[in-house]
Amino acid sequence: MNPIHETRLKIRRELEAPPALRKFGSGWISGVLGMMFGLASLGCVIMMRFPGVFTMKENAALIGHPAFRTGMLVLMVLAFGFSMLNLVLRPSKALGMTGMIATLLAVTFGGASATAVAPDLTPAYFGLDFFVLRLLFTGFLFIPLETIFPHRAEQGIFRYEWREDLFYYLISSMMVQVLTWLSFLPAQTLFKHTSWTEFRGWVAALPFLVQLIAIMFLTDLVQYWVHRLFHRIPALWRFHAVHHSAQNMDWMAGARMHFLEILVLRGTTVFPMILLGFSQTAVNAYVLVVYLFATFAHSNLGWKLRVFEKFFVTPRFHHWHHGIEKEAIDVNFAIHFPLFDKIFGTHHMPENGRWPEGYGIGGHPVPKGYWQQFLYPFRRKK
Image (tube, rainbow, N blue to C red; front, side, top):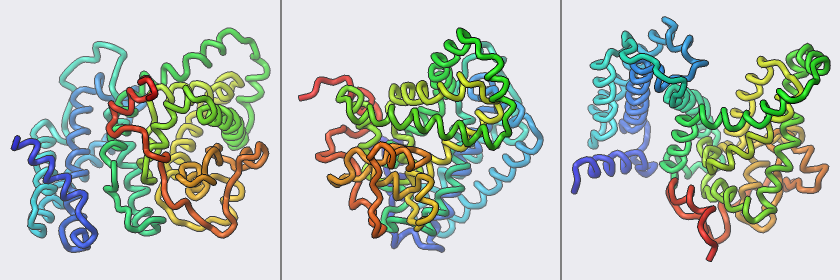
């Protein structure tokens, strides 16, 4: 067997180890943390070495700040320590060795003192920094919560098809510049050809919180109908079916979206906040809010939020949208406010606190793997 393929299999077997082999003190937790921190450290060094290629313009000041280098040094120390602990405690050394090698490579290529070695030749870039920071932020936030308060305790962190969804995370992060530019282009073009100067000035002068709530309300109204069309029009459903093909729900499941669906969904929902003239601060805040809301809605959290779920979307609300049961078909389209589903007759939340028994699409027609799923909507239906 190819040594690289064999190593990948060992790492995968370790990550997907049964619960009995993942107990505290077995070295599994330290191995996962060591590998994750080691790879994150290596990713940070790469984007510091090639900032014009792998760094978003918005993050340039952050990555150049001394505090970032201090944090990166702490990250490498943690990666080394956790990897070493795994090597001591666990019979299988795959995770610890991966974390150790990644950390040593990060140190070799400059570590926290790394500087740029190539000029920024073009305005184009890949969002490696966005991927690393996004994964660390959401991982640190949701993995502990899903572990302590799970809806499905048996699911685990590295559940079925976790690699596919992680790859979706990677692609959407690395292509963030293209996705953002194409998504905002229609609204920005129309913005330039409309003259609502006084009205937009009034909107931009509203209190920040009022603007944020207004953006959430208006974009959710637009997204509700666009989302519903993706379910009702067969040609659009074939793209949206990729998202619904996930058979497990957690903080990574929301990343599984076809590239073209992302463009259509984002391209339509940004119209209200761009055309109406909301301030850039409010728009930036909304981008963070909608990202956290979407991650939260897909998460494997079993919280009983009886009062909160009457006004806001919760995991149980959105899980019913992904449910495989007949009663879960074409319900709960909102992403922020269940009010829209109540108004338009698509609201479904069983009073007894029930959750769906399973997720996905009946018969599971969508193929496995990113590229097969990318091509799925374009293939002739048999």
